Length: 523
Image 1 (cartoon, helix red, strand yellow):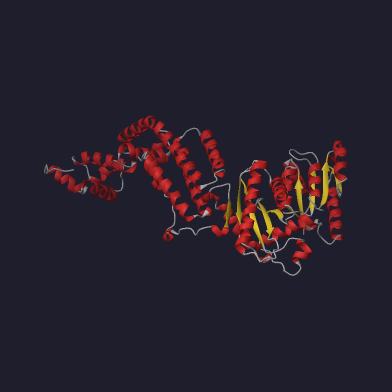
Image 2 (image 1 turned 180 degrees about the vertical axis):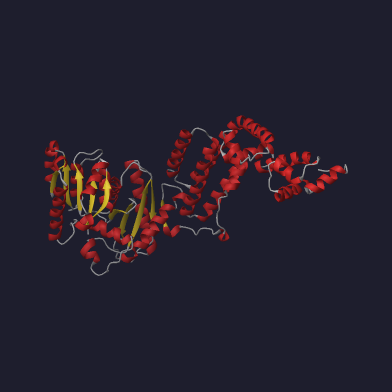
């Protein structure tokens, strides 16, 4: 089945294109969509389609430039242009780059579009089924397959597909800490840098599916039988030179992970995992350096004890305004993470802490627009944290800001608690729920419950029950039956009333009445 990529800046037009054809019946699959040429190039680089359908006029990068970049990169996919009639002069430029079909959007009918697709499909069938790719692009695609674990026969792999590249080799995984550059630009910059410092060395620069750049460094053939340690030293020195040149020449802060030695092509997947794992250790070791897999220390297992985030404990510290204890608890979590040296675990714990933060703010703020803005800000800031030290400091600061807000609103909300207790004293005989009383005082349920306990010294339920039992004690001094008393104080179930009464006073309602009549001391 042939793969197609649709590039069009208007969503409704993309939707229309998808709806025009029975793709499965035509033997074609839509594998991607993009709103401009820049997005399309990144998708093409990661997963080249057989057919490209593109508009001419688009923001950021138009269709003309996209087609030019595609051809310059060596991709020979079939291309269908969509344009408006007045854009034909632009389309002529694209046609010079080998466009297969040209359609006017305003005149295009489903049968016209389907016919154009079938023409392109027939053309692909005639050349053996797939659009051809030139040698550099073929190498990149093959290397991408190798690092993903695709199996190839060693045999003539180097000679037929990889040219002058050879094994043994080292792999560099280069993480650029700038978020405003696409991987095509990153790849170009790194390629230029290695050409500048590497002279006539043979190497390959290619992106993985995450858009991060990798460099294959074949070990130079030496006649003096150089030791493996010297080979790794050579690779590390070259990596440091790349790091320095990217910083000085392009102002780019980078971290480079260096794999162990790969002796054959089937070991390239392992080398990639080693290099990327090494680069991820920047979280613990800091950014802007070369991190060799061979130098990584084994993480401490902490006797296998899992790291858990206690949401209830954090809530207690927050509502108790226990700043010091909260800082110590958050700090201890990151101390444990630092010993484990597991980037995935850091991400998991960070997300758990973030969920606590984002779930707390709506409880203590009535400005929902501000809360939404804050949530977006949190996710944006968290994505930019580079080291575990930065993460630790960020979370401590974020919780401190939340607690400062709670302190500021605390005094005004104390009046709400007074209002709630007065309401309970007056309406104890009615059904009173935490939900209804929190709505009555215009506070969120969770915030009200915690603030109530802090201010009154007992939970909302404990307070309501105690008020009801105190009222019952007064009524039991008369001749009213215990069941009637329970009904009047809001506890209609006689058995439950007796159980609760005894739990609080130490005596059943009947025993309490007898003690009152005997004028004995009762509670």
